[in-house]
Length: 109
Length: 118
Image (cartoon, rainbow over all chains, first blue to last red; front, side):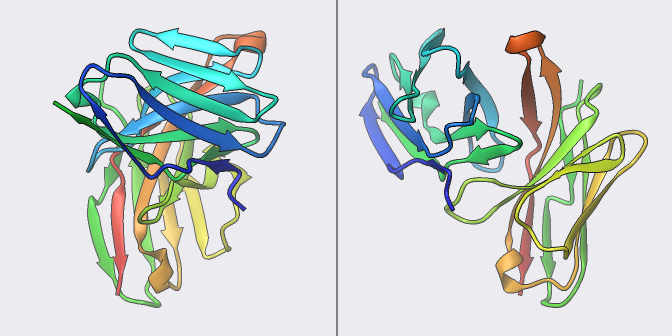
């Protein structure tokens, strides 16, 4: 039972444009959401998070939006850079962390 | 400050064998979680250790067991290995940031151990 879903396995974006990565969840009890970035041969690295009491959190080029009614969150990267190319995981926290299956982002120079 | 370290990096075992994976958390982190990441999937929570006890457990059979030592390092043991146990095993150490309603658990992942069962 996949409680956190990332329906786009991959995404390609031109350098300088906006990257939008999406994530859906099923459990309304989740109260904290995170995005992780993963390069090959490395563990996931924390990128940005949002509490369920907020609908937006911004950190530099990265913004996470939370729509609780739709059980949906998204990560916006503006402007996208080639170094952003990685696999991005969405995660939700209840009594444990639940991860999505990841979206592989490729930023084309 | 060293990050989360895991050993070994890679491991090849045969079906039915047993394996032990090791994790050293970041300095000051007293909580360690283990995850299994199969190819093409996201990390799946196995269990979490705090104060040398298993505090939370995901949907994994009893063949998966663990231990946490007084220095907060941890081991993951898998018995009677199956082909389906082939995966990247990630360790994450964590600490709480903030307080009250803004208190959140921040996890830091190690690079993982790639286990191949043949």
